Structures are given as structure tokens and as C-alpha cells.
Length: 290
Image (cartoon, rainbow, N blue to C red; front, side, top):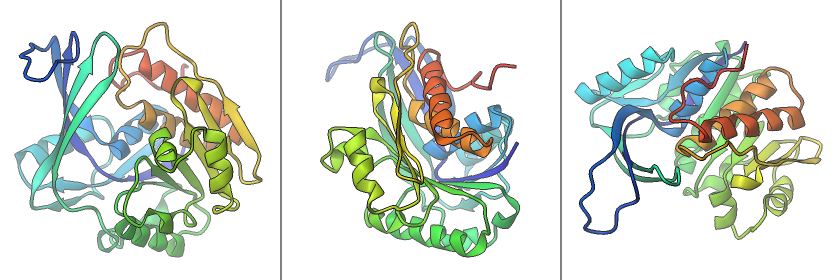
């Protein structure tokens, strides 16, 4: 398996499961609560670790008790945290309301911590890893890191997750080998289908592998030769928890490519894995069946 470096944010997720989504000013008792590591990069990293890869996380951790707690929780999941940067500030927290009736999740996020930057990345031996996955944050900061990776790496692939609109994000699109787009990003750009969006983006990202998830409809991928592939959604018997489904898809697709599978096969694996995740609570137990 591969040695993967995942760069992005790590948060402390406080997940309250409720019987129904509360109305404004309603007082509601939670059915259950769990406090777990979260954040796009950290979630994808854990799924990749369960799939057998050695995964190190590049994130900023707060130099305070909650930051130490988060680092311990990440390490307990088998993730390397030695390449994380410790900074003054408060640990980012996501307060998540999980609707037990529908599996939907509503997130309120608080952050008072700087982003990981290219200066810290200079201290990380990226040349020793097999794959680098980057979560798109501020376009300028993320762009500087991607540019540094392109200068330091030889043939190691670089993937980029693009979940939401960011300042100066366009400057990132020519740098990765793989870009993983979300449906909200595509819709925010004015597209009502993944096919049209990927065809448009392919004109600006020649030779890059592109994906776009589309909820229950599954996902599409455009390979480096411009061929479009589609895999329908694989719904579970019941939708239990949609939190982290996109992060799971991203991990599944990276795993597929890193394992030598062609784009269409990697796409199928990622869609099926995301379907499994939606049918269960949390991100545990997502390794490949033995």
C-alpha cells in the first residue's frame, strides 16, 4: 500500500443525534452525542488508513488542551501527526446536528487558527511519500503549497479536494494530477449536471483526472484522455448518517488509483464505499472486506 500525506484541516466534531431537526427556539434533548476528530482531510485520511495505507496528516493543531486531545484521537486512529504544525489559538470545532429520521447533518463551524502554509511544508519530507492529497483552502495559501509540491516531487501524484468556493481558487486547477469536485461547487458555478461541469473544467485542466459527486445520482469522472465515466449511486438499505460521505468518496477514489485501478474502476469503488458509509454511523469499519 501507499504512504500518503493528507494536508488540510483537523477539527473536533461534537455530534448530537436528534429525533428531528429542531425548529428555531425549540429546546430538544439529544438521543446521543459523540466527540470525534473531523475535518475533510482528517476524515479522508482515516478512511485511507482503514484501507491499508500509511497516512500522515499535515494540519494545524492548537497549542491548548483541546488540541492535545485532538492529536491523541487522531493518533489513536493510526494517523501520523508528526508533520502537523502547532500554533497558538483555539481548536476548530464543528457542532453537528444529525437528524436520525433522515440522516442529514447540519454543521456550525468555529475556527480561530491559522491555515497550514508553504513555510511549514518546507519542513515536511514530502519527497518520501507516494501520494499527496490537499484540501483546497484559501487559494493563495493552498496555491503556494501546490506550487512547492510540483517543484519538489518527481512522479508522485497530487490530488486536490475542491468542496466549496474559495478566494483565488482558479489558480489551483492547473497544478494537481487529480481534482475532486463537489456538487455544491459545480452548482455554485452555474452547472446543473456533473457531465456539463466536468466537460467545462476539462477545457481548463488538460490531462488532469477530474471527479464530481452528485448525491443519489452517483458520481462522474473525466479521465486524463477526456473520456467521461459515470457510476450510479449505491444506496444503503436505510440512510443513517451522511456526515463524511464526500470525504469517504475522495478516500475511496484515491485508494483505487493508488492501487493501480483504472479511473472507471476507482470511481465504482469510491461510489460503493460512500454508499456503505451513508448506511452506518460514523466512519469506522470502512476497510476493504478481507
